[in-house]
Length: 144
Image (cartoon, rainbow, N blue to C red; front, side, top):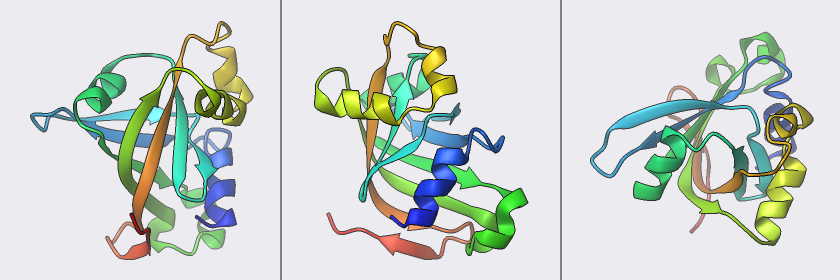
C-alpha cells in the first residue's frame, strides 16, 4: 500500500469520511458498517478496532471476506483514483489478545480510543489481496 493510501485512511474520520466496511454472513446477507479506526497495519494489512460487537463482528466470524470502502471527494485533487475512491478487498480475522491486538490499538485514532476507555474491543486485521478504484479497475493486486 502506498504512503498516500496510509495518509488518507489515517485522516478519514477527521476528514468526515470514515471508511465503510462491508461484510456478509455465511448465507451471503450483506452489511455495511462505518469504522472510524481503519488504519494501515502493514504493507499488506489493514486494521480497525472493533468495540461495538454488532453485525460486522458477527459476520466476520461467519465469513472472513470483507471490503473496505474509502471515498473523499473533498480531496479529489490529490487522490489519483476515479471518483477519489478506493475499495480494499481481503480476508478479515478477529484478534482478541497479543501483540497484533496491541499494535491495532496503537494505530487507533484518539477519538475512537475514547469510545473504548477500558479497551474491551478487539482488533480486526484484514489481509488485503486487491485494491481497486470505483470503476473496478485494479490499482494493486497483492500475491497471496
